[in-house]
Length: 532
Ligand SMILES: CC(=O)SCCNC(=O)CCNC(=O)[C@H](O)C(C)(C)COP(=O)(O)OP(=O)(O)OC[C@H]1O[C@@H](n2cnc3c(N)ncnc32)[C@H](O)[C@@H]1OP(=O)(O)O
Ligand SMILES: O=CC(=O)O
Ligand SMILES: [Mg+2]
Picture 1 (spheres, rainbow, N blue to C red):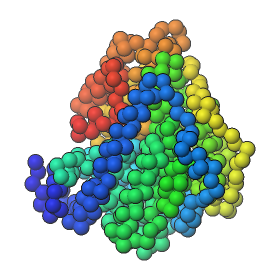
Picture 2: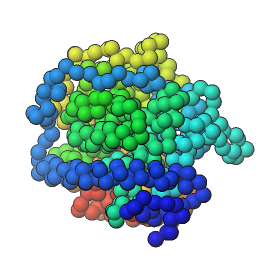
Picture 3: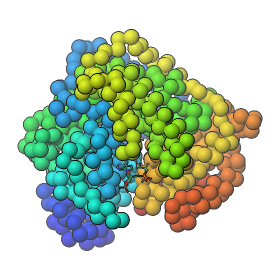
Picture 4: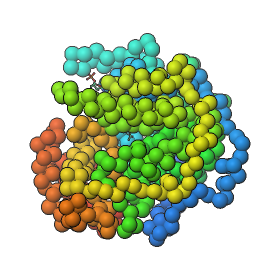
């Protein structure tokens, strides 16, 4: 165990190496907050994770989700979330990206209204990424962040995007920090350090501590975050309701509890976001043992698929009824260099995506790259004009039933190209993640933990579903997948930057194990985290 050169609260151990600068983040007072929140809330996190396991067993046995009878009074009630602070009123375009220093500066300067910095889907949560991410945030909030790289100087513009931070989801531990001998929650670690160092500074600069909350499966999980907010505000002497959080509705189970999630976070809510990629993954995962469940090639499962359309519209209607912003998700398309024709097609895809969201009534949407900000802004401005949002646009015409959320189409086609694509992307992404980079362009698309989850879970599911049959009539089998893995690995080794490194060989092994083993890994990042 690494001897820590920093003063630790009673009962805390840190096993990660303390690099120069980390002591600025890992101060005794900040770590004391981490320890207090951990002692107060870790038992509940564990209970809620156990509830997930029990629920998964019932779904595996054939139960199907529905709106909860015990919370009908919340869905039927007439209530709204607390008013949105000025800094979060206008979120027509939100750029997202990992907490890497250059990208942090570029994202703030991108012209987007807001910027979600990501300790989650687009980030490999190794110790150094988490700590340097916190340093980057510390410097960015104070506007002192700068960088010299490849002959270029990076610093913040006078006008920058409003910062929103995404800590890790409930399933992820921070294994380098132990409290009373046990690993702590990655999410609490990310949140508490950020809050301790930056909340007051942000308030002094006219904004506040704003968050995105990922991958929740129930309103009880949202209640846990809310209780953490209340205690943190008390500990830091901040008025209750200072923290604001947008919840990603990115699991099929959360889609049945959108009203309840907003209600739990009522004083701290800044709306919901349609996190489409994890949502698709969650649908595959939750119905993985249903032999009749099957989704077509990943590229065919778009926002216009019936179950995705139902989810997006229900989210919009729910948010606006409660006075909450509805923020659209991410088109994975990114600018394509050196191929104007392909680039035009990609830009057209992003334009359509944002135009659909804006026309439906969404208040804004995510982009993955600075080169998409202007285009996305144009689509929202066409609909919103000079209004900061369109929360006043009510959609009583939308009537989404449980059956609509569970109408999993399209089931076909599944093609050999689609299967190979999933294997190729899965191996490429795992290899990059293990090497420390959690977001990469692959085949001209943004790939992160959520999109890669779809690829690897589809392969597992196609092997098992009775409908997992290729267009040409061949059943997808474990043997077929095993035969393709070395071929796709060779392509990845040829194509990926640094693809000849050891992490890609390991990625091939992990991919084979994950897609062909009898059990389904709950998240691909859980076994991967044990390897870094
Ligand atoms: C499912 C979800 O959870 S979505 C949310 C999580 N995913 C994300 O946030 C995706 C973030 N996007 C990215 O990481 C990147 O855009 C990638 C990996 C997809 C592509 O990155 P690159 O190949 O580096 O793109 P490219 O070479 O075109 O970048 C051009 C410039 O834009 C910058 N850039 C690209 N994307 C971003 C971004 N999201 N934020 C800030 N800067 C960015 C690059 O750093 C580069 O800067 P430079 O010119 O100063 O060197
Ligand atoms: O986090 C976003 C998603 O689509 O997943
Ligand atoms: Mg996600």
